[in-house]
Length: 69
Image 1: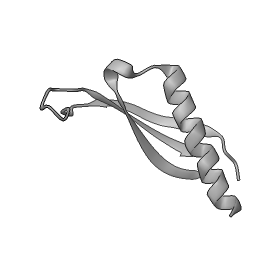
Image 2: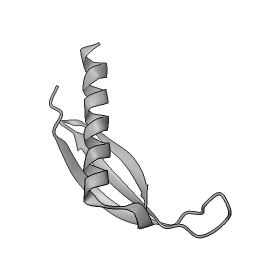
Image 3: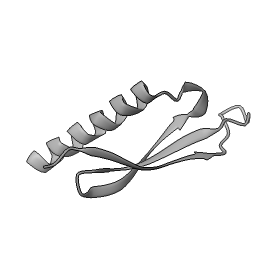
């Protein structure tokens, strides 16, 4: 399975924390090879490219593991 991650869209969306505080979220829409689109959400204040890449690569590996099962 092709495990190449390609980001399709990055969008900021409103959300609320468990305490009711406004907490912006960054929604990342992506594909793994020809599969998807998939969505991962990140708290905006914690959003950075290293964390995003790590999370998406981890997802791609897990998806590849499912395909190999």
